[in-house]
Amino acid sequence: MAGPGWVPPRLDGFILTERLGSGTYATVYKAYAKKDTREVVAIKCVAKKSLNKASVENLLTEIEILKGIRHPHIVQLKDFQWDSDNIYLIMEFCAGGDLSRFIHTRRILPEKVARVFMQHALQFLHERSISHLDLKPQNILLSSLEKPHLKLADFGFAQHMSPWDEKHVLRGSPLYMAPEMVCQRQYDARVDLWSVGVILYEALFGQPPFASRSFTELEEKIRSNRVIELPLRPPLSRDCRDLLQRLLERDPSRRISFQDFFAHPWVDLEHMPSGESLARATALVVQAVKKDQDGDAAAALSLYCQALDFFVPALHYEVDAQRKEAIKAKVGQYVSRAEELKVIVSSSNQALLRQGTSARDLLREMARDKPRLLAALEVASAATAKEEEAGGEQDALGLYQHGLGELLVLLAAEPPGRRRELLHTEVQNLMARAEYLKEQVKMRESRWAAETLDKEGLSESVRSSCTLQ
Ligand code: ADP
Ligand code: MG
Image (cartoon, rainbow, N blue to C red; front, top):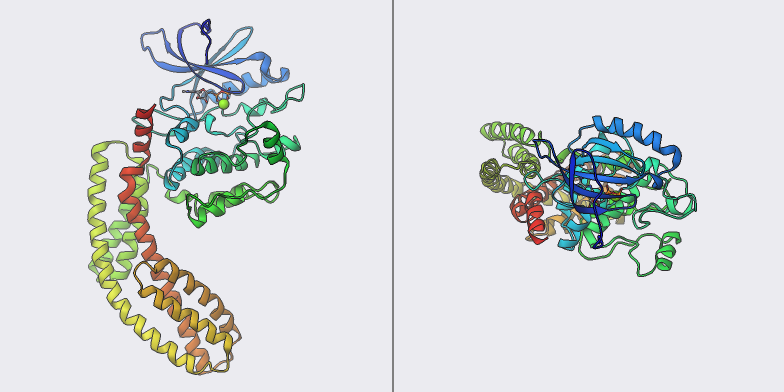
């Protein structure tokens, strides 16, 4: 975009080279230090005139504070300088470009990659409960190729830069701004949750929810009070859809809270790739092996599955190729043992299933005058039938949960007696079935995640995107 006569600004101690990008307030250049280190940095030039006058002072104070912050997911501010026109922020250089480019060179991201990105980007919000106010893919950078991590840029500046200037002109991209920011001009930290929703939507569907051909169309979409509809394709998990819908709630008072957001099953912070993932996985394997030695196949299987849920993020976290291979080899062994255990567990499970079915027949005999109970038992039988079909686990689970809901209500109203006892046993059986299936489904997903990691892993996707550029 830089015209032919373009000259980078001069700055003491640095040689500015190519232009890396520009945003709402600034232009960013790649540069290197003249000193012996020749360190590569990114220098962001912010024109003083783009700031609220009172803000310059505040901003300089804030920068002084930011300079001290070191966080793996925030672009590090190394130093700053200023002259009569500009403030220069000397930052760590992020060789992977920004998330916007990353998404668009790949068209869309798989859910699992989007989740890892989300977990990276939100870690700082979670830890420090501070707001960004200008979250968008252009402000999320990818670090180096060797250590591909997401980093938030533009951190701490938005507070000083109202999206509205003195002439009441909106600055920045309304595509990512919460509707209340554009319409009411009054907003708080909850705008970040809206923006997170938009970024996630764009990562998964390839364009933001308010993508428009004209400004009039965009304005209409922002001001409307229609519920944001999610495209049907690509198919997403139920948790993912639920989260998107709750983030993209126009009314901030009805939008998901920060607390619920961080506790949401899709965000799953507990399984976020971190330096601890491997240790947690290993600790679970130790327990699994012990249960296995004790002959408790079901408990061992469950522990192996839980361990896999930490091995996958551990693999995401590991950057050293050799160590990654070593972890993968171990995971392969555990998966094989889990498969063997599954066979053992499933044969004793078959026996239980048959016992459960005959108990249910007895109960059915005693429920002739109770249409609601009969119907609930029908659901349970349908679930059992589904369970025996190949690949019917997920459907069976849904049916068991549905049947259980009904039976629990009926059990509460059932007077003491033989039928109550049978009903109680039935509820317990169904709960055990549901638990078992949940574990099966989880295990399949973990295994799938471990197997597809090669194709979809974060570092791999970063690499492939970088060779595309
Ligand atoms: P603005 O405040 O004007 O939005 P940003 O800090 O978001 O400016 O930077 C604008 C663009 O410059 C980013 O979208 C990104 O493409 C590029 N950029 C910014 N900082 C860096 C950096 N540290 N390393 C590499 N590229 C960067
Ligand atoms: Mg920016």
